[in-house]
Image (cartoon, rainbow, N blue to C red; front, side, top):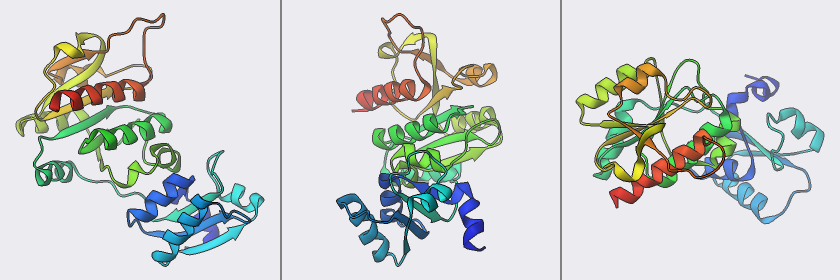
Length: 251
């Protein structure tokens, strides 16, 4: 594949200083790093040093050229071309928990479509110690440069599995001992639920919430106490609050 073709492949791109640096540090296969000519501040120097360590080609380009390569509005002066993000399997996520000697903690996303929400949830999942994220193959956001940038590098460390049917996956995971709680404004207050043990946290679509078929398979519905004038939270914010309540209860 020639360079012009690579530059058109959005899913091969990593944009933003933190995202590029963490991709390099994680050992991801990065082919080339484009840096805005004249950039020599500390973060850029760290990226260049890490790229050199991995024998990654560095190309200093004009602002116009970088804008043509970029897929986002704010690339922070750096874009990397890499092998497309690899998805994990559900079994690999479970194996990760077993190797750490921890009860599985998995976040399942039922139709999240906004890449910024997916990226933010990836970041939360990593910081909360979740062993992985499961997304459906259809009608949902996939791993893209915008997701990578919003995740601030978490995309390189937290595995993501794509499945054909989220409901069937929940059934299979229940047989392995997991139980499931979904975010629901009409559910039981999260403080009144026991969120310890092997658990799957289900977060629904930005507008429609958790689908009926998936919701029916969940063991409990958890609500977040709210006192404001509006009646809902952004999906990634809700995921963060519930994930860290799970962290608190697990100790």
